[in-house]
Image 1 (tube, helix red, strand yellow):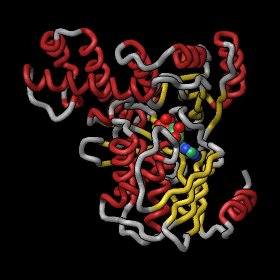
Image 2 (cartoon, protein in one colour; image 1 turned 45 degrees about the vertical axis):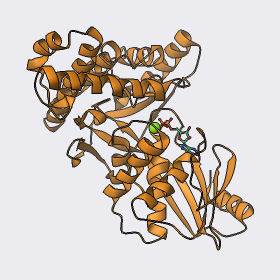
Image 3 (cartoon, rainbow, N blue to C red; image 1 turned 180 degrees about the vertical axis):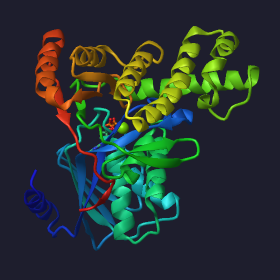
Image 4 (tube, rainbow, N blue to C red; image 1 turned 135 degrees about the horizontal axis):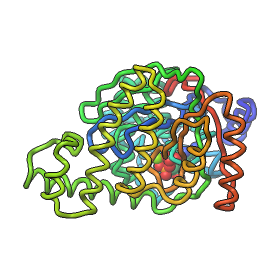
Length: 385
Ligand code: ADP
Ligand code: MG
């Protein structure tokens, strides 16, 4: 959608010119899945598709919101920031509410028009994008002293407490703090991070979109969070203290199996502990430019998410299997929460065309729907346009 068109729509909707435009990218996670809320290491990067916010202030206390993706407009008053069922405006309204809770109260109303290239509910984190974007826009326009780390923390608080998803900090952090051509190694317990140049030489990172509509994602996600909390409580009581599951070690898994005496909880912990280790191994492999090992770790991550954490499903399993069958592909895995959504694959640049052809046709033969495959650049995080 061209800028000029959206600005015209804005003027028609609100009778005012756009005063500023902000944008937030989507993200993928290279490795470290379902790890952020377990306090371990994750390795995300931004990707160059965006949600944009067109903004102007108003002369009253009203908030006017519209999403061109939802084709829905909403009017609220700054004095009523209550939640509205599961409606999309909970994200921007929740952001305004959480800003106020943190001492950043907005007194003058505003208009916002959102438009997005990020598919909603596909695991590329359109939710953290719209949250970081709303908070970044408001802190910029109302001159609040909020750095990008605090943007992510307010977004995280909104998604947890207002929207009701018990998510970790990864998505909000990478979208707020992402750096061009770099991936981010993030310690989710300490909230400390380092940037790593992400250049795969003769290889490219591809995003594979299954186009499976997600169902039950939020409830299944919250269920996994609860299972991990339960396992941690048991291990703290009967094994040894830890602040989070990622503080346990692979060498302790035999003992942990005995102590838990519960196959399901054991497999959840096995995924978390092994995945956390894979993130460190992945970082080492990247530093040594050992791309074969990078690919192998992606595959192992997927299998653990499939067999131990049980969050993949037929569509993600099929698309990653088809990906791996290509000789130019070093590895593939689901990315994001799972249950549908997207996967990533590392593919030799001169094999990409062949890869796309075989995966797209194999996928539609197997499941009767089309998938999308695209390459992405890594841009900076949320910013003013
Ligand atoms: P994901 O973050 O993987 O895209 P979620 O289910 O966490 O999926 O978030 C998707 C929800 O976020 C949408 O259903 C909608 O409520 C909200 N949302 C995200 N982007 C937009 C947008 N551009 N316009 C309106 N709502 C949006
Ligand atoms: Mg989300």
